[in-house]
Length: 343
Image 1 (cartoon, helix red, strand yellow):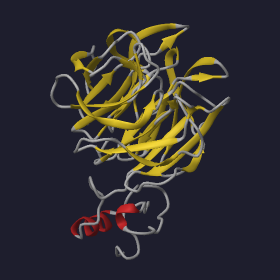
Image 2: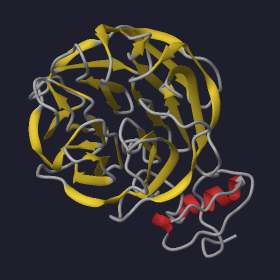
Image 3: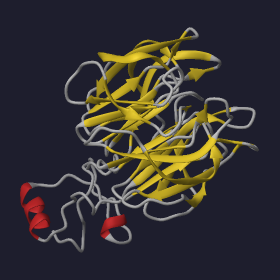
Image 4: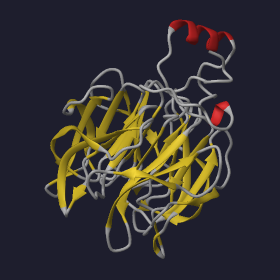
């Protein structure tokens, strides 16, 4: 076995010859210890930085209809999204997160009704998303965050009322949500992002400009982190594990904003201005690699749009155009294989 034949990436039942360069390939397969040792020795075993990061934008509201589409992008290369597969129900007002190998969505609205559904799809093998488990109650307009082990659903609305509930699942194990703790108050349309240890929760209805945090490996109530530069609902959030951004959203007294804020995840304190989106938007969703954050504009002044923006997380500055989704989407979910650069 040589790296000329196969290069390891994601474990699955059948080996797949990689296409293109190693960094942009997904050569899945079952590897014995000798093969793995040879690949590690040759510097070809996947580690942070040499596995391609794919981003996924999941379902949401189109102009006049609801989508079940899952789009995929290669975060390192700007360009239009391609159709990856479908969620198992047309859903909006849902949230998403995941690990390098599995995407998770929480709740949302299906046919106008809130749902308890937690759904998943396994990223190495494209296929229609399926049921993972259930939330403790039907909720929409939740936030979500995760590390490579746990996914946490944030707040949301239950029969029209906001809730302070945090629930979690273990990403590798199917099952229902378990109580994690509480937000500082009832909140919906908040956004979450994370490092490998800490989850951040920013914005949301009834929370003003609040940023709070949790330690993902434990359980318990949130702790105050600081404040956004302006109060807003429905920002897009993303992180590379070191720096987190909150982009756009619905500010108090205004329809939408183009402001991008950032914080340092490991510390606490108020957000600073990062730059601006290419246009003001709300109800978007965001994800990231170790270097880039990508997010869709969502609902712009002209209506729902398919525009994707990106920023380089280590710097500051205005967002650039990345490309387009396959359809106009708002109130959808997003995640990536790089999982915020954590893998």
